[in-house]
Length: 101
Image (cartoon, rainbow, N blue to C red; front, side, top):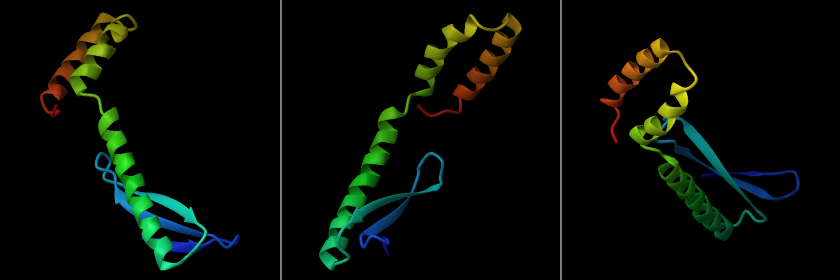
């Protein structure tokens, strides 16, 4: 965690975390009035809560591949030629063997 003082006198606290799906670093921040030790501890707790909420949201919104595929396929069938449908269904079926879940 690190902090920066803004021009208006407030302190902005930052924390980085790694997104488990993209493996990229993400950043969350909290702005508080003070830069004291007590404020730093409060900011650390708020940042940890924000990160936990973001990671939990990723888990909740994560659809299983089979569920998403089964929802998508009927709509896709109506919009493409048979040759395209056949080709893409074969590719996605092969892909589904490697997807966990």
